[in-house]
Length: 153
Image 1 (spheres, rainbow, N blue to C red):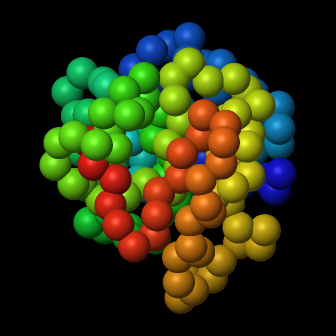
Image 2: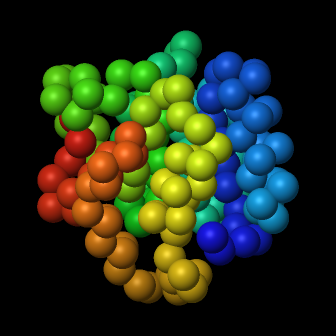
Image 3: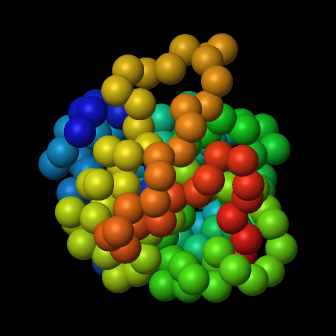
């Protein structure tokens, strides 16, 4: 896994948020952790992140709403959505723009690392490079978005 990337973790559950932050920092990443979509947008207004990992179900701004707002300003931002509602996220609701990977909650640290490995490019893309195509779905609990269609929530 590529080390030294800046990751924004967004989850309203303190234990989940802190656990992800500790694991990712242990793996050599610079991690900013916030508890809401609104706080995530504040962080995104201040700095660039290589990756955003967000929960779907949060009070206030839900993860799908956060993804839509991020896509408005940064269409190439890499995003992983973590949710206990993954099958429903894929099938029902309104399209909000796709995410690069979808993680089923509860997930293991191994699954989190696999999702990050799949979405992060080997080399940092320059600002003019196109979005890397999403990988094909794997048989693990990680589901990846097809680059030509949106995931639904």
